Length: 107
Image (tube, rainbow, N blue to C red; front, side, top):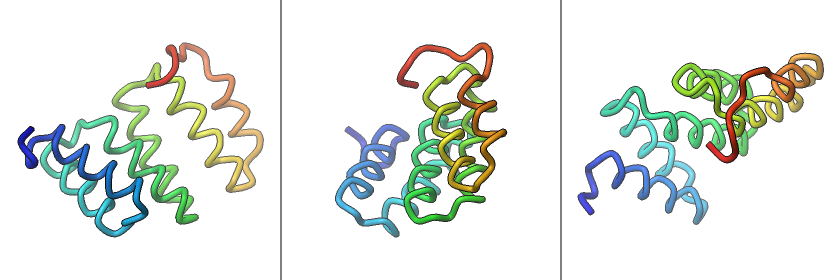
């Protein structure tokens, strides 16, 4: 697999993220988004990385961007609900958990 292709960059980012190399993972997710600004997975996983680091406002922005790209993603709606809950926004979180038109798990 070409390590500089979208799929290659995503896999490298996921590998780095999985082994806890946060700075490397973030750089790879952002590089992927620079090359493919419509990459749903890169927005969602970068949002996850930000959430794990308690960069909650940034996580909300990134997950919302993923939902603009794939509005029926049940996974993204649920994850956004989790981030909003962490921000102590329970009403908004519940709205995400109950969002109409959500698709099937996982993405």
